[in-house]
Length: 273
Image (cartoon, rainbow, N blue to C red; front, side, top):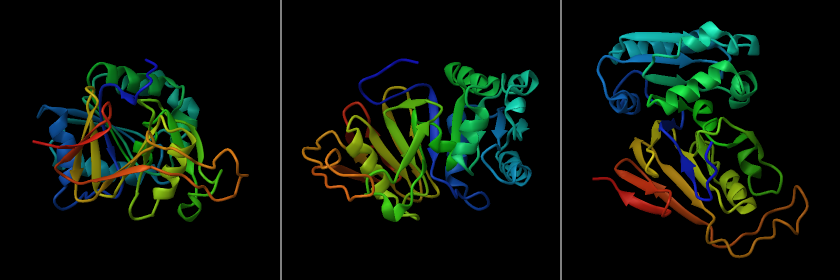
């Protein structure tokens, strides 16, 4: 993994905020398939994050069948022994799209982190395959991943718990179901504790398409909130105790919708042609 002082991501990634439309217009999921770049495509669906992986797998099998997938592999990985199974890892070797479903991101990292299956995902990413994740499946993209923290306590020191994610992106922290669950305080706390990071809050039925040139494009019916701490002047984060409220100045916030983008290198909002 390349270490970068600025936000960094590699390969082709789509982070979805959860609760994307799976039965009507399919705006976000159609765009996922469009980004694959071929009509005869193969998809691997990893349902590990879900409490009901069989049901989740059937739902997405139906979606991607409707969207023309020529082959669909469903990996209902529930234990680390399965995540280290060579046959399951090999099942991802020739897919064009790997899709990580929603649920609990800590289940994903604790079961798949450091496994042969994760290595296969990373290999496919490096070889040009598209990796897409929704809700928990998007949260794990980050090198530092939020896994717990009540929305109403987001601006109280220590209320947001993090651990290591899969590291597909560095210094970019994803938070999902963002508008519906009022999670702005969580990302403000994250960038206050480390202004190098950029927080990306993804609304439901919305996604962020990340490209290796440092640019992102927004797709879907909701909003994407960018929380940028690079201009932070004063904060009380070091002076207060855990549980006390945070004071901070000059946090920059951008609201993006379909047709807009963001340049992570220049930290600038873009209009997508």
